[in-house]
Structure formats: C-alpha cells, structure tokens
Length: 548
Image (cartoon, rainbow, N blue to C red; front, side, top):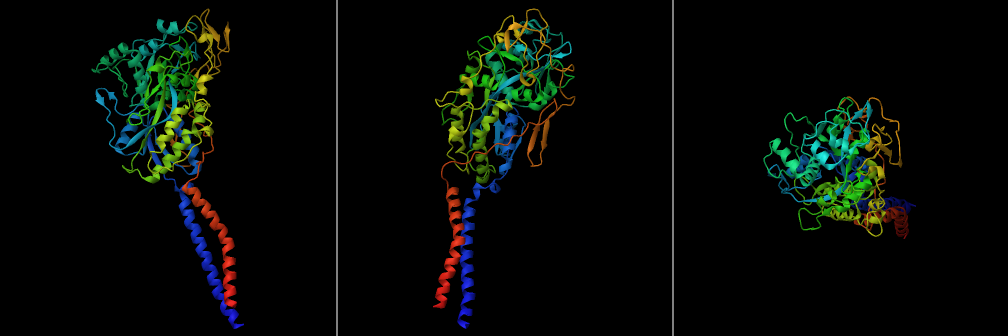
C-alpha cells in the first residue's frame, strides 16, 4: 500500500512534465508559423498619386479584415516621390518615374534602392460642368486640338466655332470656359502635359512662354503653369479639381482628372477624338485597347524597368482607342534602409500580391482598367525584390483578371465594343450621357443633330433626365480624407453627394505552393495530436516501472 502511494505522485509529476514538454514544442512550432497570421502584420505608410487613389483606397480597405493596415496619403505624385526619396514613407505611388526634366530641373533618382511596380491602368478624362437652357450637357465631344486650345487659354467661350464643330447637335452657350488645373505637383498633370508636348507642341510651347517658362521645348511638367489673369482656376489634388468642377455654381468649368472621379461625382466626361476619327470615352475596355500601343521598358537591368512610352497610345489607329490612357506605378524599396525593415517588407509584399491578382478584377467597377497579363507577371517578379517578403508561387490563372486569356492576348481589349456610328466625326452626334452621367441623355438642340448610341440610325429628341439645377453637386468644395473605425484613411468623393467609395470585401488570395510556414503548421498539428496521445502512453510506462 505504501509503495503504491509513493509511486503515484512521481507518476503525476512525470506525466505533467511530459505534457509541458509537448505543449512547449507546440508553442515553439506555432511561433515559427506566426508570420502566416494577421497579428504579425505591421502598419506601412505611403504617399503620392491621387490619380490612383480611388483604387488604392478600395484595396487597402479590403485587406483590413485580414489584419493588414496600409496607410496612404494622396498628396500628389511629386510629393510622394520626394517622400520616398527622403525615406519618410515606405512606398510611393506615381504616374511618372524619377529622372524626368521638369521646368529645367531634373528629378534625381533616390539614393535608396527602389523598383517600379505597375498597379493599375486608367484614362485621364475631361470632366466638365456645362448647361444648355438650364439642362446639364452629358454628351460633349472634343478633339485633341480643341482640348489643347482650351487648356492653353486660346479658346475662351463654349460657343467657339471649334467646339461647335465637334458638337453638331448642340447649341452651345456663350459662357466663359474656365479650365480647372492642379495647383500641386501631380502625375495627372505630367501625363496630360506629356500628351500636349507630344501631340500639340507649338501650342504648348507658346503657352509656356506666356506663363514665364523660358525652357524650349517646354516638355512635360508636374506643375501646371498658369498665366496670371488667364481665367484659369487651380485646385489641389484630384478631389480638389473634381469637387470644384462639380459645384452647382461652377457651370462652365472643365478639368482633367482620372475617370474614377467623374464616376464618383456623377458628372460626365468629354468623348475625345482618336486617330481613327471616332470620339471615345475612357471606359476600361477603351483604355485597354489604347494601351495595346504602349511601349514598356523591358530591360530588367535599367532603373526605368517597366516604365511606359505612350506615343503609340496617342496615335493608336484602333477606332475604340481612348488616346489619353496610361499606367500608374507603385515605387517599392529593394533594400533594408531608411527605416524600412523586414516586417514592413512582409506586409507590403502581401498587399502587393493581393492587388496584383485579386484586386485587379475590381478595377473596372472603380473606373480603372486592369493590368494585362504581361504586366501582372512583371509586377509579381518585382514583389520578390521587396526585402522581407514571403515569396509566393501565385497561380496566375486563378487571378480572375478580365484581361487574361489562354493565348496571352488582352481579352478586355479584344472584346471591346466598336463605337457607335453617331460617335464618328461628322454631322451626327450621340445623345447618351458619359462617365457618372450615364443614362442621362442630352436633348438635340440643332436640326439634323443627335442620335442615341443604342439606336444610332434614328434621329431623336430625348428628354433629359438631368436635374434642372444642372450642377448636381454640393455647394461645398467636397471631398477629403477621414478615418474610419478601423483606423484607415478613407477618401470621400468631391462634390456630388460627398459619399465614400463603397467598400466591397473580397477574398484575400492565399499563398500557393509549400512554404516554411506550411511545414511549421503541419508540425504544430502533429505535436497537438501528441498532446492527446503521448501523456497516457508515458504515464502507463512509468506506472509499470513503479509497480515493478
């Protein structure tokens, strides 16, 4: 009896020791697997483009549910590039690369290691606020020459003969044209002025001289030159120009801004005349068609790897082309420096894997065009250069990107609809609304003028569905950045109903292939089973020894 009593405490101690050992091993295995859990993501911060901000804000809201916190400040591409160069942000977003000469000053490359990663495509649109007889115009058409003349101050009223020629169905008012330009350094301005410097060189150079720019040729600039007393208005950020243009009191204004902002504010955009003589809208499919003419730097050894040359887009002869289509880029670090560490690299890499695959399928709903397969592949390769990234083997066929096809062609571009007959330059004009004013037709006000794109052979005089106020926007300047309950910076639309982009939860793409974390998780599972099986076996063995 006394022998039995003396054995039991020892048996219990050994049993508990074995259990503690197994639990310790389980804890160790779980700690190795920790990088696969949301709790290990650290916040990262970036700054730059407002052109891309609608897409970027939506993507970073989507990943909050997984514990990924990505902060972003839409301060303009120029500021974003400078902040990345100075090491005050972990990443930047810009439509233009480093190294360009702007106003005689070269934007020098950063000392820190970096790489460009394409994130989304889109169209720089011309959003406007115009009325005829108190009714909003939603079907405006503009040639490239007219756009250049408007934004160089050469065309001053909406009833100018050049605008009237583009719009044979409209009796345009003798209202002053008010161009609204960016007051901050922006990629949108750089894209727009690159187009003007390339396609309308003489007009652009003459305007720059009037604005005090002595450099010839004037070339591309991130900071729009304004002639004092020239009738222009300057606003900061894409939200600023879109919000100002959408105000009910600002009839007669026109601005250049990414297509997404026109959709969010409920305002139309001008259809732009392309090389084939058709006026087209910057829809995702028309942008995809246009970018088939882009040349991308494929020299992986070059600092400018993956940057774009858009001359072939401006002159793309496909009748579906939107001529001011382009790509936007994330600038990512390639070295552990300037306060960028491996934990931040892990978070940034996971976010990049998300938007290059899963996030692209949402791009058309946001007003952008998804990246084609060649740039997604190139982007995935760039992710591997981020220090600290958990490299994934992505099955690109499961990305559900609407541009992908089995033969490598761009499906979105291939299936893009041909423009309606009434979109061809000539005596007829489509009455259908564009951008955020889709479904709002504009009444024909000239004999022989308009037809509906859905019924292009019949002349019609539809009733406008736009409000009599015409502006449709808030009297406030609209737009801004707020913080949601999750601590995310959230962009609100300028003007209109000042509503946010609706967040839509998407499934975060999981890593494919076998990784160290997978092995650790398997080990943890096996050890967890051991917790249940091992203690009784050990106890039984010790009990037998005690009785012996």
